[in-house]
Length: 108
Length: 116
Image (cartoon, each protein chain N blue to C red):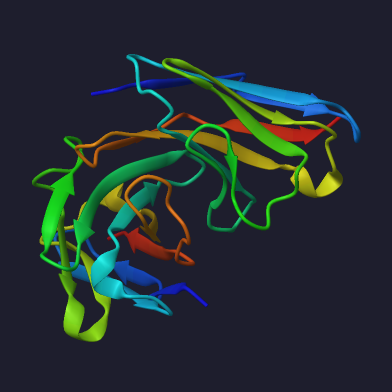
């Protein structure tokens, strides 16, 4: 199984801050990483697919990068509505998937 | 609009069986994989398995293999997740989602509570 580690597990930031979350895979997964946002009581929402592609309708302050085993998710300027838990997720050509443990982002 | 609508919340006793559903609309149901994801109370997302309704090709996470059954009825654009004997530890929110790489969109979730 491919394991995903994600850090930090939580962070506090102010409006306008740059927020960075990292995800590391236990083996090379090319660019097969997606990022999701989950607000309390809601279903997850896809933000970034295949490491760096912004899903349609998602604000441009969200971005992703990386390949191989190391991936980064960035919010360039944190807004109040971005308070949520963020998950990375990897997939492979065998249709097997793993989510990272999540990063909870709240307001300082 | 592409949409997945899940069946309503369930309260069951340990040992009972259960089948929850996920109905797709707004797209060709047989052309996209549907996955199932568990979220236990206060915890993260866990991928359970995935099915291709076009030919019922199904894959399971090793953690859930043998614990649940995933199926689909393409005549009514619906995927299912079922248990033959529920345990208290199955208490969780269960989501379906379209896709086999990125998951999008997601259903609204079905809360399953198992308690004696």
